[in-house]
Length: 464
Image (cartoon, rainbow, N blue to C red; front, side, top):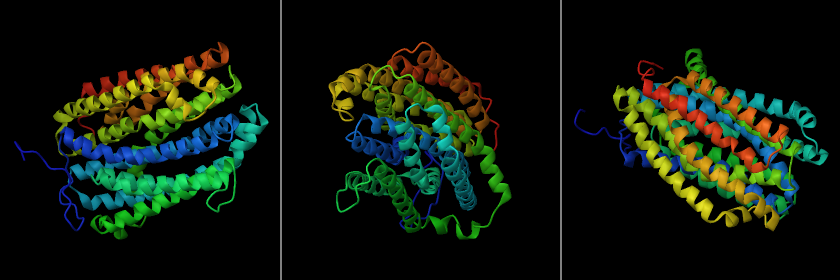
């Protein structure tokens, strides 16, 4: 194949994949990453839709949505870590052109995901009330958050299976089919939010908790649609899912070895964000601080979807290229992905700085809320650019299979982040804009070791 481009996975009309190896080009990067963007957009649209509707109930509800949303994101991040580990393994087998091993990886990944989701449900139902009663000050906030989460957490199994399907589709270069599940879940969430929060379309008016029910049902719909897509495309037959349903200790162990560092990595990352929100609630310097922070979380998530899609592309393509024994081309690939990612982030940052009042005004119409949010949004816009660089290199490390390195980097970054926000918010009690400047420290600290590790070449002989 020397002197010619290796094709992306060729899909026949029957849906069977004849070649799972990927090529290095901007066209192929975009072909893989743009559908992933749509898939990542799903939870962000769900969070934003919830918050746009809940913001109409009041700033207290909007603030409580931030606390409960970040808590749920902790478990979502656990699934995302498992997804990334599984995705890298599937992409490696695809690069080695061993489709017969992909079905076993996928089946064992689903089994692990369901067990973890049950643990997450039990923790939320029995431990979260105690946690929030000990760390939050406002009794009304405590009641809202605990009640919301007792409903919302039942969406976790659906979310995890949806993420495992994403790992399969992305790892085998079928990412364009993610859009179908994305549209189904997004439309369902918007309709159900409107109906269940305000009692429209013949549905009961459930207020704040209506958003929780809407999200759970929407996640279930998204999962079943993606399952239907996999069956429709013949992937179940192609990767021998039925023959791979029995428990395989060796494969399960491999998935856990690769994924556990990522699970801890993403988990502690979101826990540190929850720590930040708790400090905001405890030391609010203004009436809108908690609501503004929740708004920034939504803006950061929504406008960062392209960055996270390119991050997933980075880990998948790096793993696939290594599987083809093309280690010397990996850094060229990562630089190419980073340039596209950063270019888009700069355009987003420009947009946010040109129209800050209009963006913030979508979440709250009070002029005081908008005025307080503008300087924070400018801080967040810079953080988005830093993120677009750092996560590409960090996820390149994921693609090499050295996920313990990822965990070490995350521990270092979260420590710096947590110390900074504690000093700024708890001790010095500075403005919320200074609190959000913690994102600059976090992403800069992440870039340096990730870049150094990839440049060192120490990953080249790693086998997974």
